[in-house]
Picture: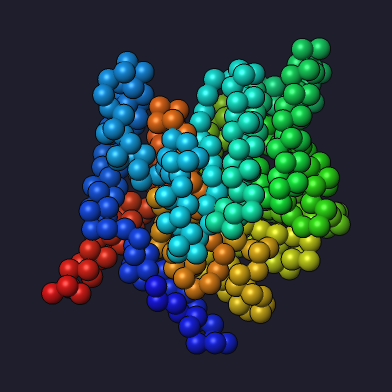
Length: 399
Ligand SMILES: Cc1cc2nc3c(=O)[nH]c(=O)nc-3n(C[C@H](O)[C@H](O)[C@H](O)COP(=O)(O)OP(=O)(O)OC[C@H]3O[C@@H](n4cnc5c(N)ncnc54)[C@H](O)[C@@H]3O)c2cc1C
């Protein structure tokens, strides 16, 4: 693969428009399949009802599994098990991109399901141990504890005896995950979720950071900059603490839900007034973290080209090594390969979330990806444009 840092000492600005680098890992057949899939996202009926119908078909044992596995699933997931993700881990690794195994099953809210999810997260940590191709692991607190319970804790409401016991279990699972991560020297992201459970998540995560980020950031919290209060929260947290801290910076995935709830319940929406406000705070947050690299590590989880460019400029301007392990950029598997592959090729640290789990259980995740790709302004057009450009380039270079 061409490397734009090939001349020693000369750092060239990264461009995301090199489709040869972006799609080197994909055959013409793969690209045509991806084109077909992203084109389908333009049809709201397919996006809104497709995954739901697929779920019904699968639960009725109708033979749809292969169709889903070869289309939506193949684009956005690594496999049904950790073992099945092996080829994706290797492919990404050969391009210098790390894997973040993301057990994306959204199961029933039962204790045995929470236990099983906790065990699976531990398995991802064991898989990542000593494996340079898997620089991070990740989990959601709602994967190991009941949403309503987390909300009650968030509201500081008194828990009854059973709930106390149940919450104790959530804390034990959280602690087990972070302790295993620490003992295995594997970094772990705690995903951010709805604002009405986020204080609980923040408190649990900060406790674990304090305990386990002893010589570097192992436990990372996630900061959603679409909330108008989060930049200040980040600033205060960094100012008030001396231990190592890790932050995954994202814009936030629950905007419509947050706004609708605030309006229905009659409180001020936690979401910024405009997209520009979110973008401004996102950049400010990256700047702040880079200024405090002595105790802060960051991962920019974004598909936004300007944010990624801004981060690369901060790194280069401050003479920080492009492969400094305290700074990463991350995208989701199957999305924005032009960003991930070009950044990695230029020597920056990149890792992709690789969701996995049984096909039927990851359908809600796939449904969200389909919706996101149909609604995020210009996302489908951007992916289709890049694929078309690359197919044209390959044809011309053959002629
Ligand atoms: C690796 C990775 C990890 C992630 N982890 C999490 C997580 O833990 N928790 C989570 O919630 N999300 C997470 N996300 C999703 C993320 O929050 C965004 O929803 C998604 O990445 C789109 O934002 P963007 O920065 O990529 O790009 P952009 O397309 O530039 O931004 C779109 C985002 O901007 C915000 N926005 C859009 N319109 C407005 C408006 N009118 N006013 C204010 N804000 C607006 C919304 O957050 C929207 O999702 C993750 C994403 C990635 C890539």
